[in-house]
Amino acid sequence: MFSKELNNIERKKLIELSSIRKTNNCEVWVYDANNLESIYASFKSMQKAADHFNVDYRSILKHLDTNKATIKNDKLVLFFSKKLDLEYIKWIKVENTKNDTIKLWVYKKINNELVLINNNKPTFNSKNIAAKELNISFKTIAKYLDTNKSYNDLLFYSKEI
Image 1 (cartoon, rainbow, N blue to C red):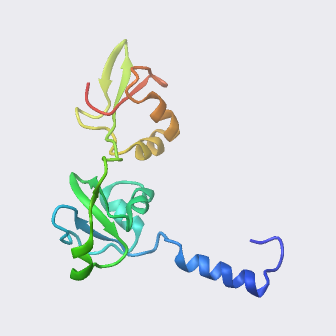
Image 2: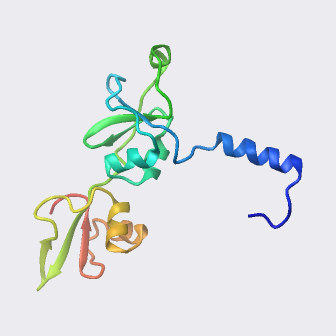
């Protein structure tokens, strides 16, 4: 929505911007960061890739076409918006990044005892997923993560305690 009618120049600029913007609808190709082999058939959208890896689509967007490797489903992968040809693969320099998706162990305080709420498994695959399911903010989880301080009788850890 616009507060006034756009002139021709403004419309052209808007069309240019929208055509270069990465969108949730772009196809996603996933490559093994160790040998640059395609490891999945392409995903029809970032959301479908995100669903497969059980992460928020912004995690895919953040790494798309960056040559920055990230760990998803216990694999070091790269995300691209197109199928890579052999000539391009020769020139790729993979940048390793730390795993930005932190598995979350959530404990509940019951009678002054800590009880893992998911049978000795990581409770959530990411802070974003935990925030959505627990109906609390991402920042709240980040604030209390690994602090030994509880929030609504919940304690958040990046590893099992």
